[in-house]
Image (cartoon, rainbow, N blue to C red; front, top):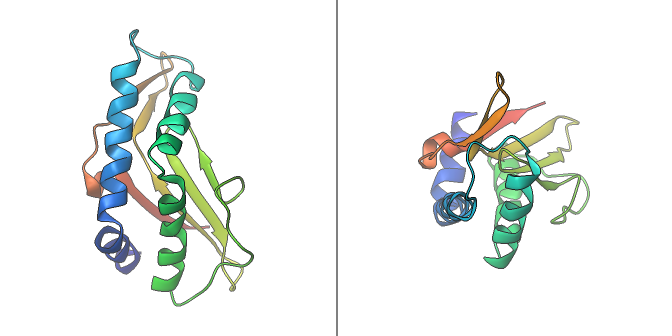
Amino acid sequence: MRPVRRRLRSDHRDTITAVIEAGERVVTGIDTWPVTDGSRIREPLRRELTDRALLEPILGLLATGSDALGETIDGSPVTAPPYLVVTSHGPLCRGTLESGRRLLVELGLFAVERRPRRYRFRDPDLEECLGVRLG
């Protein structure tokens, strides 16, 4: 997956950086920490990404990732489930490749601590934010 990560970091550096900045903005808008309800992160993050016109560029990570693998995504990805979801961890793109494997690209902004259950901002850099895997 290193070539895919390298290509995504190279081609989408500005998008990933903007997503991290959107996560920082969400953090400043939440006045009570720790956050124990994921919707208190997920909903403001979706609004922030939408307001910054980042949903299409985020979805572009999926096309670039599949191209780096020498494959294409089945179907026509759109900025909605199942191709793009905004979770309480951050944006997640997923698509089925022509080979039948699933490509997942996650921009991980928030982590969940299990006991007690609460969310925290990871304050990731570009490398830490980007997660890529095949399923």
